[in-house]
Image (cartoon, rainbow, N blue to C red; front, side, top):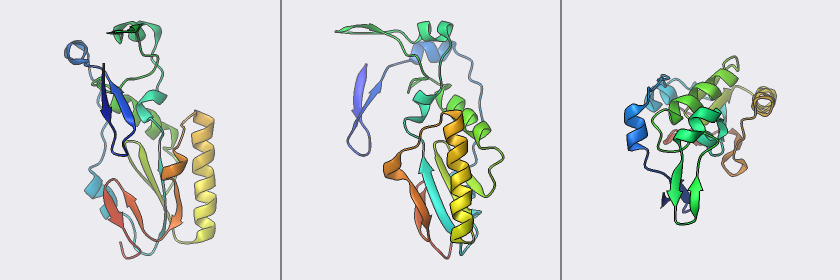
Length: 166
């Protein structure tokens, strides 16, 4: 087990799954490139952004898969109950699950664990966001309150700054 700092300085626990990854089949799930996503946001729209909290860890593993994630530390032997960072299928599993959850939410862009909603009015943004949050709650997707931005003219999404003019 290796603990590395996240961008914000908080610790991120990782395990070396290279041997498991070599023996695993990766079911890929397509994600549009960030530049393509942000290029499709209409000008003069109010934007709401949300970030899933520890996205990978929101996908449960079945009992057989859990056994394969066992790792040893000086404090004992542990195994993951949810998809771990470092496994080749984790990102695709989470992205597919989250995409399936919000598939029929209109006027949205999603990149891995980041979601952007865009609307032409504050009223539309309110109800659109309400429905999105309701869908996340019903499906057990937890969002980070500290990264949530509601109805802004300018936001950062997938590493790009999006303003009122696009």
